[in-house]
Image (cartoon, rainbow, N blue to C red; front, side):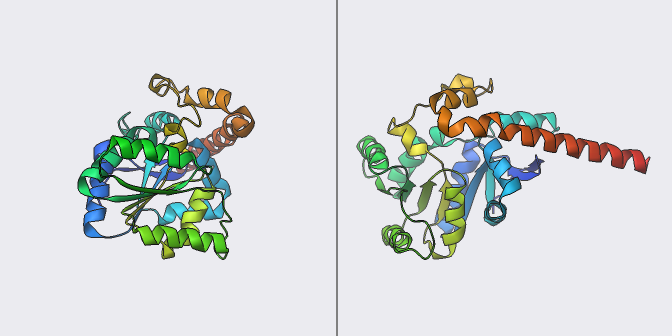
Length: 260
C-alpha cells in the first residue's frame, strides 16, 4: 500500500489523498494485479458509519478512504489536521482524467449503477471523447441480494469483462453494502464507490458549480435539486454528528480534568 497521511475526523479514519496520489494508487494497483478498494467519506457516509454495522465493515475492508466533501476538510482543519483543499479528489473531477488515462494505458473500466440507459449515455460520450477506451456499463436496478439470480448475473457480466477498474454507483449505503457482500467474487483490480457520478455526465442530475465547494454550499445546491430524496441527509443527519462532536469534546474535557 502507498503511504498516505491518515486522520480521525468524527470518529472515522480518512486518508489525505491528492489527485496525483489517487492516480498513483490506480496505476500501482493495476500494475501489480492486486485488488484494492478505494472508499470515500462525506457527512452522509459518516452518519451511516455510526449507524450501520455493514458500512463499518466495508470501510474496514477498504485500503484507502479519501475525502468526498468540503465539510470534512474544514472539520479536519478545525481539529488541527493539516488537510488541504487539494486533499479531496471527487468523481466529477477525476472521472474524465481517469478514463483518458485508461484509454492511453489500455485499462478496462466497468461502471455498475444508475437507472437503465443513463450510464450508457455517459459511456457513449466518453467513448467518442477518448479513442480506444474500453468502457462497459450495467444499470444498478436489480436484486442485490448475494444469492439472487440477478446479482449473480451482474457479477458474471463484470468478471467476463475483466475490468482493471470497477466503479459502483448505486448510492450510499447500497453501493458499499454491495461491494462488501460481493468482494470475494469480483475480479477487478480497483473497486471504487462513486454514487451518482455517471448521472452527472449524462446530465440526468445537475452538478453544483465548483465555486460552491469551498463555500460549503454544494449541499444547498443538491438539496434544492432533489429535495424529496435529500432533505433528511442535509437537514437532519448533521445534527446527530454535531451532537456526537459535543459529546466527544465533553468526554475529553472531563478526562483532562480528572487527569489534572
